[in-house]
Image (cartoon, rainbow, N blue to C red; front, side):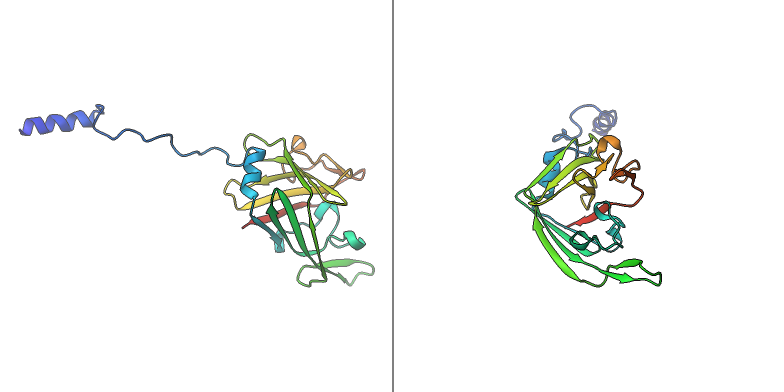
Length: 203
C-alpha cells in the first residue's frame, strides 16, 4: 500500500495529467484598458471629472492664467466635468486675478472664486487612439466654440489628462506630433512654451 501511495505522489510531482484541476478560462487581461475610442467613452460615461489645485495648468487652452482676457480669462479655482450621453457638462469656478508688486502684472488666485460658468458640449470626437493607450486625439464641440487637442486616460482609471487649444489656433498638438504635453506646439504662429495639460481626477 505504501508503495502505491508513493507512486501516485511521484506521478503528480512529475506533472502527469489529472493531478491538478483544469484551467477555467483565459488569464487576466493585462493589456491596455483604454486603447480604443469605445473603451474610453464607455469608461468615462457617468463619471465626474474634477480639476483643481496643482492639476490646473499655467496656460489652459494655451493662454496664461495670469492675463485678463475678459470672458475668455483662464484663471480657475475648480473645473468639474460631468459625462452623460457622451457629452460633457463643464462647470467652472473662476479664480480672481490679483495685481502684483510689479505694475501692470497680475497673478491668478486659485483660492478666491470670482464667478462661475456652465456649458455643455454638443459633440465629442475621440479618434486616432494609440494601441498602447498612451494618447488619443479629441475634439470637444460646444455651441459657440471648439476645443481640439490630445488626451490620455491613465491605465489605473484614476486620471484623465487633456491638452486642449481653441479651434484653428494651434498646430502640433495631436498624437501624431507626440504624447500629451510634448513640445513642438505652435499657437497663433508662435512657439508655445507654456503648460496646457489639464489633469482631472476621475470619480
